Amino acid sequence: MASESQLARLGLFDARVPRYTSYPTAPHFNQTVDADIFRGWVRSIPENSRISLYMHVPFCRRLCWFCACRTQGTNSDDPVVAYAEVLRAELAVLARDLPRGVTLSRLHWGGGTPTMMPPEVMAEVAGAVFDIVPLGENAEFSVEIDPNEIDDGRLDALAAAGRNRASIGVQDFDPAIQEAIGRDQSFEVTKLAIDKLRARGIASLNADILFGLPFQNNERIAASVQKLLSLGPDRVALYGYAHVPWMARRQVMIPSDALPRPEERLRLFETARDLFVADGYEEIGIDHFALPTDGLAVAAREGRLRRNFQGYTDDTAPVLVGLGASSISRFPQGYAQNAPSTSAYTRAVRDGRYATVKGHAFQGEDVLRARMIEALMCDFRIDAAEMKRDFGATDAQLRAMFDRARAEFGEMVTVTAAGFAIPAEARPLTRMIARAFDAYDLSKAGHSPAV
Ligand SMILES: C[S@@+](CC[C@H](N)C(=O)[O-])C[C@H]1O[C@@H](n2cnc3c(N)ncnc32)[C@H](O)[C@@H]1O
Ligand code: SF4
View 1: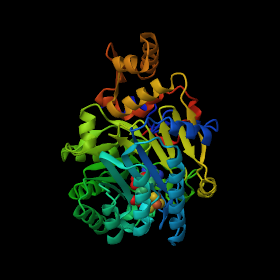
View 2 (view 1 turned 60 degrees about the horizontal axis):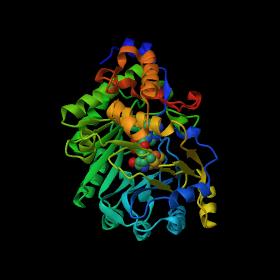
View 3 (view 1 turned 45 degrees about the horizontal axis):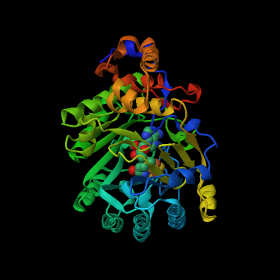
View 4 (view 1 turned 135 degrees about the vertical axis):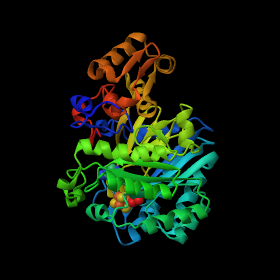
């Protein structure tokens, strides 16, 4: 591992950099991509090909103070039921343009809390999806689950609909930290949700935990990780807490003077990482861990790991269609985003239109740079031969890009005839190094701390 002073000199503890779930990143989207362009992209999907779908449900029973996700609190089921109807209407609009024979590679329900949908509504929404895009061979259907917001009826409905993966939010098990982040969730409630999911034959279970939370220290994060390990998740996402109260206003409730400093955040991450690795988990990209048998670990070993808006994936479908308010779609031609506000999204769909409001059509070096950044985030290296073969990059073009990163990061990166690589000791710098391959205005670069 590079020394703390080396990392400090390179600016790791001060920088704010994108998480690079897309390139260019969402702040660069603009209104040149509209519903007509979106329709054209949908129509150009090849017949009989595979696509993936993401469905966003922006409602929660409780609003956790730490959460930066776009979601709204409600105690009533009514808005959720009404919203589910709009999702079905959006599917009907999609069905008009979707070429024949298209099947599903991945279906993911995220939020918010998709399990706020009542069981019969879940069944209807899943049925509406499969009527239009049936599940293909080895397809995966995953759902984000808040352990506090799940019951037997909902779990049965999801299992009956074919859900074979789940992701549960843990964040941290420590009661003092839970109190500080406004998320009360006992170990027992979490364990019960996991037991119930397993009893219904879940093939892979992911858990989200956070480092960098208020009052977190090495002992506390170690205790939380040990508890999580006792539940044996197949995958873990270990995200750095992003404190952005100017964007997520409920975070003003978080005691900011109790937040760990950047140097401490790095140690928290390393403490958690070492425990996962010691327990037999493989490190996946910058912030995931997976059992060696899990699909994500297999994909990483075989060089098939990919990165999309949901994080790391082994999905190879070239098209991801995002349904619901604020959802982002990716096509070979570019990105398209739905209206972020639920009301604007609902109005468009009820009028029988797509709700696309912005996006980005790939141009120039975008696709090449997007793949380079994805390769760094997934494999910590860029294969020069792949860039030349698949993206038409020239030696001179690659050399200029590699030299630029080398000038900024010196010995922390290696440049050879085979390409560009980030050695293991420099991995904390990965997102900063990826930024060196980003040609867009970096002042709009995003708001997550580099560590
Ligand atoms: C959209 S939430 C859905 C989870 C589900 N509703 C639940 O509560 O379990 C998905 C994940 O985003 C992560 N997340 C939310 N706010 C975050 C923040 N401010 N910084 C980092 N990660 C965050 C959390 O780990 C959370 O589990
Ligand atoms: S963490 Fe989950 S339940 Fe809490 S506010 Fe965010 S999306 Fe809602």
